[in-house]
Image (cartoon, rainbow, N blue to C red; front, side, top):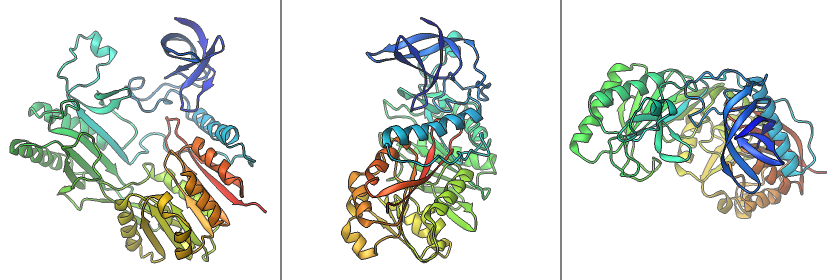
Length: 464
């Protein structure tokens, strides 16, 4: 036991840290300024992992968590930290990454754009069914046995086959709480089987909620159907959902017999409604289906895209490349200020969505191409489509492949707008781009309150 240890800050991945005899200790669920007694859970040569068994002094930065599942559920690890201080540490995370990893010349960071709503901000949540729900300390103290316990909720970090049974989640509109809890009760009353990830049996597998700012709600049910009886049970539970929750405007389902939960290669069946919802942004409509990617915080996505558009500095005459375009939301968002936008994305279904959304909004100056970025984006591509004036890039957390960075350098656009969900890999890429570009501005945007995740948009211009 380590007694009277003061928490001093946060590490890059959002874990709180303390120092004990020059050794770093990582501690979840606490905030800087807390003084705690710690129980060491794991010890390595250069660091330890511990949990707080007592908080003897509460930091001034601490607030009371809203969620009853805080401290067990793997999400919202910063819910005990005031939102004002969350923004402070997120901004510092961006500055530290660009300074220490990127080691490039930087202007002063623009003040972080915080989220107007810190609860109920998500438009998508996924819950998993399991016949091996995670038992909390409270469950164990009540003598609940471990085996054959059904639950629906979030997977526990480090326990891939176990699910924490969620009664309330404040990240999304309350419709997901009412439907999830209702389906759980219906399933238990009617003897429906919950999925066993190890044995690969059980009817109920996942449920995915999508709400939209057009007022529509889509529910995707993922089943594991192997018999006619299970098909009848699946139909019955979907009929019950439609009869009980009129707010659900479209209900779709898939039959997943694979060992993983991905549904990109599965056929989607419509049980009710059109099979999609619309998201609205300015005068644009985006069609979002069960397989579509769309930013999960609508309001902050709009703030993010406005920053991208401002940084791009478009006058109506530019050729723009939008790399890692996804479903083309950024490309279509800036298209009316550009001469032409070419979007590239490796997921073919996403490119199909991008084309549909361009047509839906009468946008005729976009071109969307499917393919692996490092293979597609080359000198032949640029020679065919034209040398871009502006490149917008929004890569995954791993950042850009070095071949992509080199092609961007060879393409020599006047401006690069780099959108990142991982400041560390963004910093690495900025260091490579520093050969020809300088960072003129960067803008952190908080998309995910109560987590350590932060988006950052950097504007790069050619060096003189």
